[in-house]
Image (tube, rainbow, N blue to C red):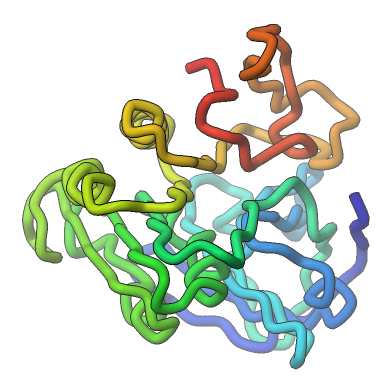
Length: 258
């Protein structure tokens, strides 16, 4: 796993929703090798532990990475205080990303809440061959729908309270219908209950599925055991604990033990 560490300038900052921010970062060497599904590990100013944030955009020609994050605790709040021109102390790209399937004719990208940003690089790759299903609690949390549409992907937005989007309810409702119409692969990122539901549906329908797991991370490079995930080998049924930061964050649906 090749990665770089350094301080990189923020080219642009944008507020997307309440306490949700997007940074565009100049890091040419990283942008050249980053893959969809990988993440960056950022050290917030004045703190000692890094924060993992999914990569939401890769522009190798211009040497730019995009990240999108929500304020959860002190670390992300410190990041949100940064401005255009400030530098980020960052290690990237980290982790094992999504499998790219150049021959796929139709894939479904399922994102829940802050799990939507990692779907953007996949949408850019698959374009019109992708259907992006996004789930949010309400209209106040809806983000990145225009970005997904610009990629050429078909978009389906779901909100739990019905305040935005075409569907009131969960992402599994449109996914279940799409699976009956023929899908080559499903890629998902979101809360653990959502991922389990998506994985169960895909396994039931014999559809290839990869999910991006979220765990607390300390080192980000597999040196500690802070992000161990219980998995099994689909061929041997052997139980093993793998690092989400190094072996993941992306796993095949049938590998994860919930």
